[in-house]
Image (cartoon, rainbow, N blue to C red; front, side, top):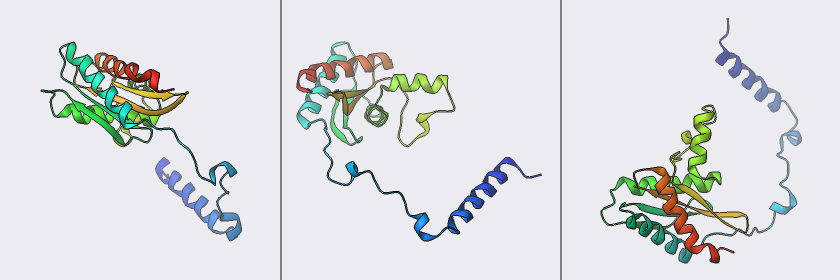
Length: 177
């Protein structure tokens, strides 16, 4: 008796064979929508805003007695600015970057993503690339569009990391419009 895996492989091979037997004109991908064929314009966080926000986030946690790292990535997950408090451990660099990357890519706070993964383990985005499902990553929006994200790592809880990140965003909110 064939296993479910063998049945799935057989079905995939059959679909591939059916496609291969179609005329070449039927195999061509659908054209892109007209709106996507010309130049596109995207909003992104500036270096100035990113620098100010990470500094405020780190200073906010420092004032509370925590040595953290804050990282801001742009809308595509590319690092824009990093601030590491004196005495923050080396792992906070990776934690902050991965939280920011996850938040930017999924356009959601990492705490909410982590909760969703706990409630629905079949949809665990934490297994994708460098995603990190720990609270402390927050998207940065301008005009309803995500233009980057901040990640903070190193406080004793994700809630505190997130609060420090939010403080950084609040410090530049007026300039995000």
